[in-house]
Image: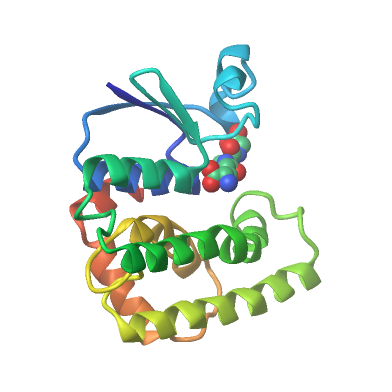
Length: 201
Ligand SMILES: N[C@@H](CCC(=O)N[C@@H](CS)C(=O)NCC(=O)O)C(=O)O
């Protein structure tokens, strides 16, 4: 059976669990990371030398990096659903997934830590710079969602699995944000899906 290592408070684990629940996959999730430990054990480091979650093990096949895991599960279990069949549609979904990792996450990171878990880690100027960067990135996603119903196109895809958890965090941070109607509509539709209700505590 598919095994997922990761604590549910981890955004990257939430992305994978959203995909797992969308696909209704039989699975076992093992709490790991932060207070749960596990990630510094030789057995875990043999699976992921980075010592980070999430990691999956699927009949002996081990994979780390949340977006790689989402791609793998979508390609294997939903070739016409979460994994768009059309090569151009798939490439567009993938470009937004890479954007989530390379652009959105670095910008949102100081907010998640300073407002949620580690108040002293970032200086006020860094937080303000991150807020401005996030607003501009979120505006880009809003413009995309004004053109199509979901991040990858007209249907829910693996790109939505990668984007929903960070947007969920952003929209629930206790701070003033600009209004983004298309993004907020997409968020409401996606967050109401049964898989999202399970994956986003
Ligand atoms: N790029 C990696 C990032 C993985 C990552 O930073 N995971 C965090 C949790 S979201 C982690 O393992 N933190 C240490 C811990 O929880 O012990 C991915 O997308 O999977």
